[in-house]
Image (cartoon, rainbow, N blue to C red; front, side, top):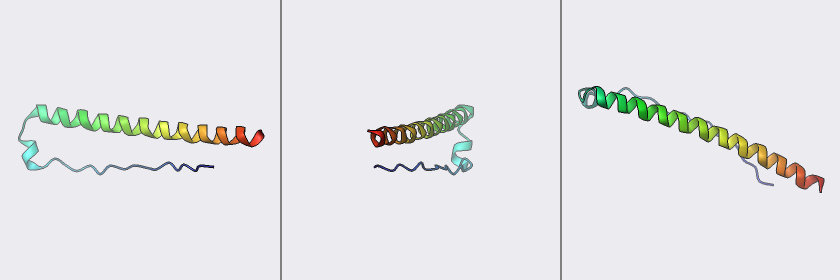
Length: 66
C-alpha cells in the first residue's frame, strides 16, 4: 500500500526591498496579484492532495474487501 502524507507549505513573506518600492503602483499591484495567485494555487494544491489521500484510502478499502 502506498502512503501519502500531506505537507504544510509555508511561504515566508518579506517586505519589498527599497528598489521595488520606488517602481510605482503598477509593480505593487503586480506583486499583490502574484501573491494572491500563489496563495490560490497553494490552496488548490492542498485540496488536491487531500482528494488523492481520500481516493487512496478508498482504493485500499475496496481492494481489501475483494
